[in-house]
Amino acid sequence: MQCQIILATSTVDVGFNFERHPKPKRQNLDWLIFSARDRAAFWQRIGRVGRVLSKSETNIYSEAIAYLPANAWEEGLTSLDTTGGRTALKDLLETLPCLDKPFLKAYWRSEAFLEIARPLLELEEMLEGLAEEKLILELFNTLKSIFEGNRTWDDYRYRMKLLRGAETIAKKTPKEIKKDWKYIKGGQAFVRTFIKAKFSEDWDDLQAGRTTLDEYVDLFNKDEDALAELKEFAEVFSTIYAPLFSFRSSVFESLSIRDPNGFILDESEETKLDPFHLLRYYEFVQNGDYIEVTSRATETYQLSFELHYTDNWQEFISTELNKLTAFKNCQIIRSAGGAIRPTPLIQVLNRYLLPGVIICPRTNAAVIFQLNKQGIISYPINIVCNDMEKEYRFFTGLSGILTMAMKFKQLRLPDDEVFIAG
Image (spheres, rainbow, N blue to C red):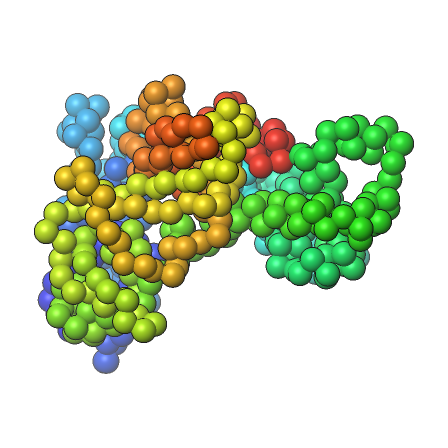
């Protein structure tokens, strides 16, 4: 903050606090150079310069240089009337197809709307019985109109209750599940979903009224395998949706690292770092609770995954491929020059379940290309079954949910429900 020039990543989009004493009378930034590949990024980033709100001096200009996609000039950017101010700029940018973000509409028409449903459900429960409770439906319908969603509040409320039931069951011990599942918020709804997904004949009986949910009390009390399967299903269900509610959407938690030689940091020796960035660009060792960076990698490592599937390849195809789920026995691998390089053991990388979608690169080449253009990347993943092995593409974490938004007609949810889309 004492420097004249700040070189920042896109993380600065979320805000940067300038704590100066005495407080400056005018804007903090005089000029800004940035890139943007869509309208939202353009307005977010240009808004960082010339901010004069609450300042006493508001007549000093700031300058900005924006790098836009090359097609913007071919599509008419040069016709901008610079005397027309913000309105003219806004109107012109709206006409440039290269700045469209069509994926964003698909995103908000998908299960991603659960981001909105969760706080609304919590508010609704807090307001239950009060006159203000009706405001929740009004607020939902307003947001639905803004984001062009097509599902009702009842649809999302039920889905959110289902997810909340899964999250609670996943955290409980088998003994606690036996005792509590009927009384957990969303617990009974989730058990019904579990039966529908795993036991089709039992589901038919439940639907037809030949059995009731109460009969499963005895089942879970007596059948430890069924209880374990319910808990695992809850873990998978809650794991795949967790990235929706995380501010940072990385599959792995950030690592505590030490950088005594200054390969990453200028002043402090300690920081948090995304594991993928560490694996790609640095050599390191485990030093107690910290990862210590020892040198820069001589060449950028390529990252991939390997999944050891305990059944045959055909079983994997029918139950796991093209499905938003979470995978066991999945490990990350780094390589360079076509050869696998040893990776120091990092505990955070040994996750029990890795969420995402695995798809075939050959039949989905166009979709992979479209997603990559939107900054949604995938990784090679080698599937090792007991009868063969084959390479696919793995969209991890939030990228898996985004992939569902683009290919919802071909992909499945963990409970085989219809993907919520417009």
